[in-house]
Amino acid sequence: MIDLTIIEGVAHVMLNAPEKRNALDEQALADLGSAYDEAEAAGVRALVLRGEGAGFCAGRDIAGVDPATDDVTGYLDGLVTPLLKKMSAFPAPTFAAAHGACLGVGLGLLIATDVVYVADTAKIGSPFAALGATLDSGGHALFYERLGAHRTLDLIYTGRLMSGTEAVDAGLFSQVLPSADVISTTLVAASGAAAGATQAFLASKRLIARLRDERLALWDAVTAENANQAALRDTADYREGFAAFQQKRKPEFTGR
Image 1 (cartoon, rainbow, N blue to C red):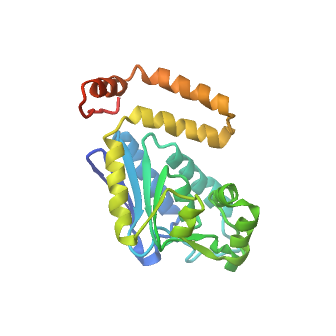
Image 2 (cartoon, one colour):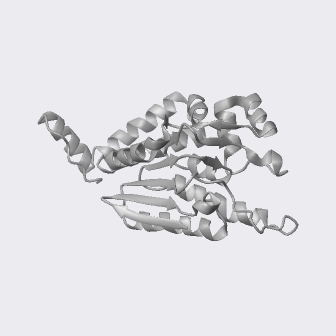
Image 3 (cartoon, rainbow, N blue to C red):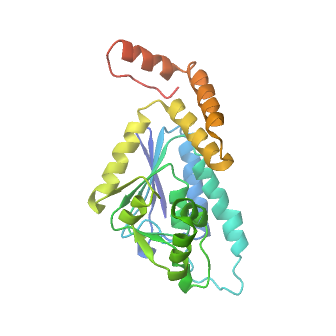
């Protein structure tokens, strides 16, 4: 269900259950978390997440779930939320290539990824109106922040799904691409990040998380930027970057 390969410092994580549009049950969530743990232990410098088949991830696998006895709290609080936090805090740049259905928990996986490239034909939104359930995995926060209350509740009440083009135009994700190009473009971007100054990237990643979670004011953010720059001065990549610029050559970063 979850495949992991590591090539030249890039972890390739694939949701591989195309027969069910990569919907995730409890075991798949655990396996996905284990893949991220293994990638971190290997010291990768970038990670790519994608789905096999017609869609990225259709959300939770509810086949066989009895709503009368379903442990919703155990699934969401016990499994989904810890996984999304782990993904968000992964100590390297992360990228996702999204196509087809990106719904429910599948949408949450994208929210927890640093950079998301989506196919123009992707389907993004809240399909829960037909289930008597509600949007989860961070969807409310993302939609409200980018779309406002009216458009968010419109999507929730109607169940209408946005295309990848609409989602990127609304500022939800990074870039929209033709379906045939989304995976290759994502892999190129991840390879570029893996060859870059990892510690500098992580400093930015941590600051963006603070801006999101703590709502830092402008000058507090500037102070944090200044502290990051001072700390990076002691890294090998900082020194290499300056030397390469001065010597008019391409830098060779090591991630340290």
